[in-house]
Length: 100
Image 1 (cartoon, helix red, strand yellow):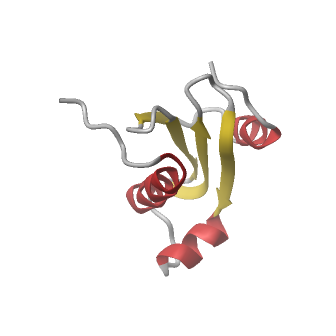
Image 2: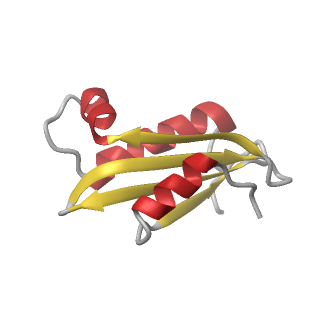
């Protein structure tokens, strides 16, 4: 089980119903991405990257303004936000392992 930081705990406290998606990477690391919603619009995103032993590589929260600026949009919808999360996870953990 991964070690958790205040970044994770703060996100979960604010968005207790967020669904987390877990990804395994070729490096052996894992990543978790979650979207915090407010009235069907993305309000925040969490990205966590962990070593095989569960230690934290990085945990980041992205607020709505940061996501809007990265996407160049006024309203952030889930799929584009998840794509940003995946890009960040790949940057820290390497390619996502394909389940074959």
